[in-house]
Amino acid sequence: MEKKFPLPPFTLETAKEKIQLAEDAWNSQNPEKVSMAYTVDSEWRNRNVFVNGREEIVAFLAKKWEKELDYKLKKEYWAHTDNRIAVRFEYEYRNKEGKWFRAYGNENWEFDENGLMAKRYASINDLEIDEADRHV
View (tube, rainbow, N blue to C red):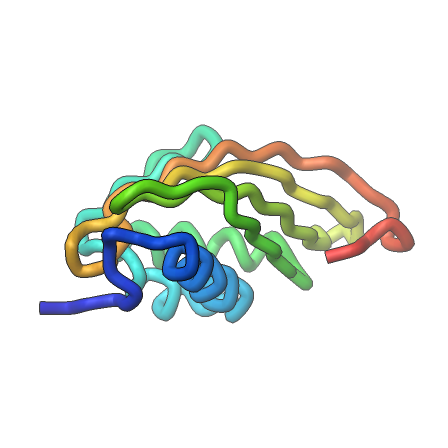
């Protein structure tokens, strides 16, 4: 059976470790690598898009990173319980026209007993910024 450490139930330390692992994976911009942290039937809500399963996760992320250039993400601990973690995040990216954006949001994560994320619900808002205002 596939396991992704640390496993639930989470402590403050292991929740923060899980968050850092997620941040590192997303900053790799490797859809296949990112997808391996999720269950094969993982459920996502990302803004107004619903994604189900690893195959759809890979396709969604590949499309995302084709449009969001120079992507850089920072996640921060918000709260946790036994098998759930909540984070706040922000990331910056440039679109193909050269405009910069900062996206702010919150994510709620639920993990299975093997440490794979079964559910990810993300609420995200984008703000156009000047390149000089970047800070991520």
